[in-house]
Amino acid sequence: MKTFDFKKIVQWLGFVLKCPICGHKYNLEKTKVLESDQNESLNEAHLLIHSDCLKCKSSVMFNVEIHGPEVFSVGMVTDLTGQDSAKFNKLGPIRTNEVIGIHQALKNFKGDFVSSFTQK
Ligand SMILES: [Zn+2]
Image 1 (tube, protein in one colour):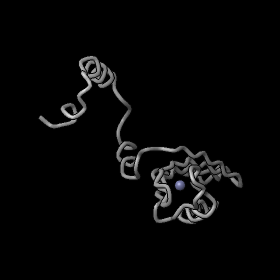
Image 2 (tube, rainbow, N blue to C red; image 1 turned 180 degrees about the vertical axis):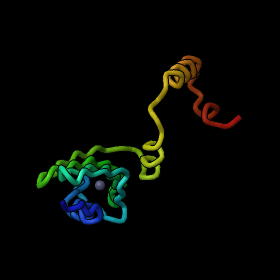
Image 3 (cartoon, helix red, strand yellow; image 1 turned 45 degrees about the vertical axis):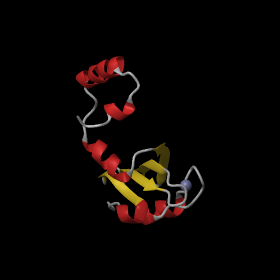
Image 4 (cartoon, helix red, strand yellow; image 1 turned 90 degrees about the vertical axis):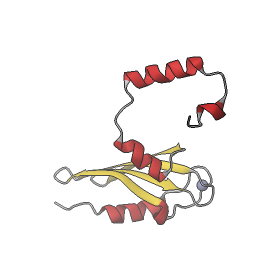
């Protein structure tokens, strides 16, 4: 069975994918693979890619599924940078106590963003 050459796949995607906001072609240097896995026996692979547009500065995450000769790609505009995406990808799901915590904080919030985001 052949193995997937992710570097080649990303190069190909960098050539094919365009920014959904401005249509600018993606630069490979600004494209990172966040997640990848493959199943060689089924000839399948999965890639999660983050890319920053050099022209309009927007960020997009692409989920790429490869099933033999078929390639499916879904792009999603995000406000996360490549660093943010890697950071949040490692974190677990939001817990109940965190939701209750933000609910209570918002309940007491009086609209003063400066004091809320300044360390005391
Ligand atoms: Zn763009």
